Image (tube, rainbow, N blue to C red; front, side):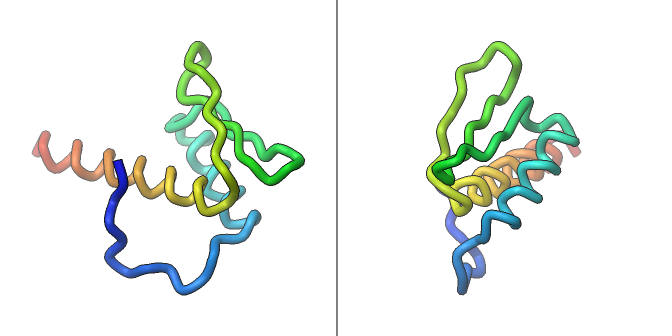
Amino acid sequence: MAIPARNPRTRTPSTAEAGAWAEVLVRHQLLHAAVLAPNGQWLTQDHPESPVRVLDGPAAMVELAAEIQHRIRTTRNRTR
């Protein structure tokens, strides 16, 4: 599910930015694992038993973080 950007990015996310998002997602247990592969792809796993997803670069990792944030916010709004 693609989320339309309110403020389109003016630059491509860096590997460092994607890494910071990956670390936050894992630390807050929103992802089980997120690992940067040597070829620049990200390997992510939602739960220990779930299949590994391959994300194609930093932009895909930042997009995943945005999708997770959106899901959390819409879930919170429904429960209020």
